[in-house]
Length: 96
Image 1 (spheres, rainbow, N blue to C red):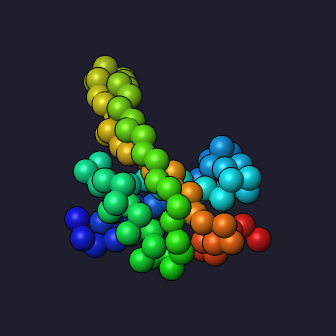
Image 2: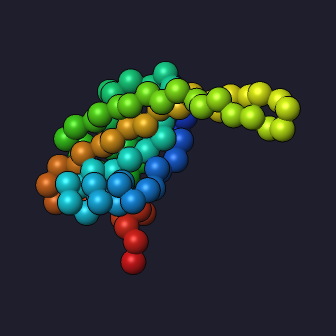
Image 3: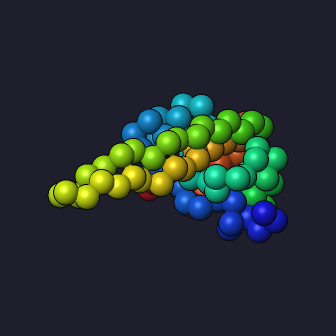
């Protein structure tokens, strides 16, 4: 996993992530399941030209779902919460 676009899949925008962004300068991303913290840190720094202070990750199990008579399962996924150093921000994720 050496390409940043294969590590960072997309930003994860929810009410909680918006509060983290405003209060603690933290941003949430959906990341590849096999990405580690060092790869996530390097990918964010390369894609957004910011300095990363800390990376926390959370693994989520996919939920069991039913579609009529058929049973299925949503995919497992991984979330990374990235804390930026003071004075840094990701301009692409700022809401006007």
